[in-house]
Image (cartoon, rainbow, N blue to C red; front, side, top):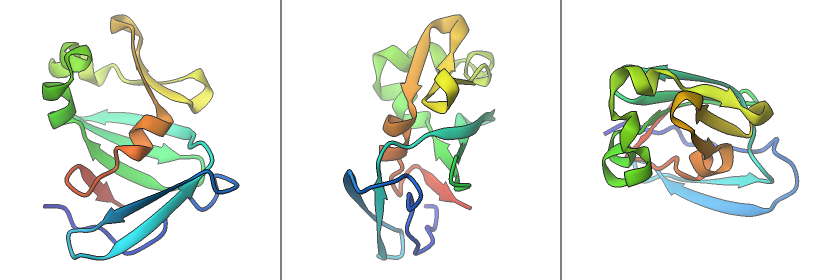
Length: 121
């Protein structure tokens, strides 16, 4: 189980639009406030991990293994080569796999940052 640091995330996304409370492995809650998260970079790593760098400089490693198994629309990404094709799309508003016509919004990824899938840097 990854250990999460006790810190706020999303402070530079702008006015409070949503609040997300995440409980870390150590039982520490932190609150993320955001307007609409935007990505600066994405990198696909072995083990179905996405390294997400948001425009405020925060970097997260997101384990997509369970999502690829549970969501039929993501099943084409279960191949290593297919998953490795992740690219930043729509000026940072999405992660996309153009060869498979699959897009995931940065806000969806950000809200999916749960303790069971998250490694915080």
